[in-house]
Length: 318
Ligand SMILES: Nc1ncnc2c1ncn2[C@@H]1O[C@H](COP(=O)(O)OP(=O)(O)OP(=O)(O)O)[C@@H](O)[C@H]1O
Ligand SMILES: [Mg+2]
Image (cartoon, rainbow, N blue to C red; front, top):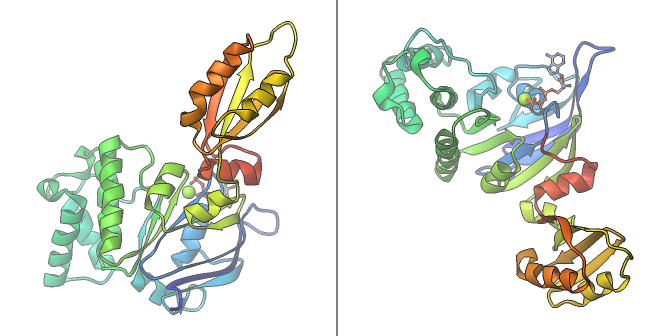
């Protein structure tokens, strides 16, 4: 089956010839029915990519085909098949949720009974039917986000783009949004989701593209990506100094049951194990038997954070 979204070597330079090159040769494909996440830190180029894929921002070069329509040749047709939930909330504060939805629905070309029916449906999806006639200015940040999502769903798009929809909101609203994304996807909606939260990408995605400095540095399922950093948990140990460095500590750690490998020198030891928690007590005991203490201990599972660190030498978290 051909992909519903096919991104081909997209580039974007703002204000050429001297401006920032925000996207530098991004290519990926999304299959129908998938949740695909773009995971990357601030300034990685997520929103710039979304704007181009929405037909709102012309690429410097490259193209993307959305459900058969080119973003450079036929942006109008692209806008019919996609829904966009922008990073910045785009709502009028002084009118009600329903009035906002009516306004945006008309912008999408809906009217009459159809408009009424869709507004009712998306309010239900947002879980805000009971607040429909309250002004947006009385809504919490999380509720505004949910109406923002409702706007993106008004014209029943085949593909929904969501640009960091959970930033800066309360945990309940976040939970609700993530569950809504999953439900919509189960009903057949294809989703392109951007985030800088590793946990969200892990929870939601069929496949993930890691983006950094405008480039996709890895694409795959979570398992495929984490396989690139190996299958073992890493335990970083800072060992308290003693009079002399006991050369056998590392060897003794390496010999413990459940430990794949131990490396290190002096005060820093790195242990790899299939299951860090299972071997922790044996490590502590061995260190104690050597008359040493542990100053700091950190467990790193083979997750997307580790993949990002491996690929960039930097942490994904700020
Ligand atoms: N309108 C613009 N004009 C000039 N430069 C821009 C513009 N929009 C974004 N940039 C720059 O392009 C780069 C990518 O920005 P973009 O907003 O696409 O990143 P992002 O991954 O969405 O980041 P965030 O997580 O902060 O939303 C940044 O260096 C940013 O400063
Ligand atoms: Mg952004």
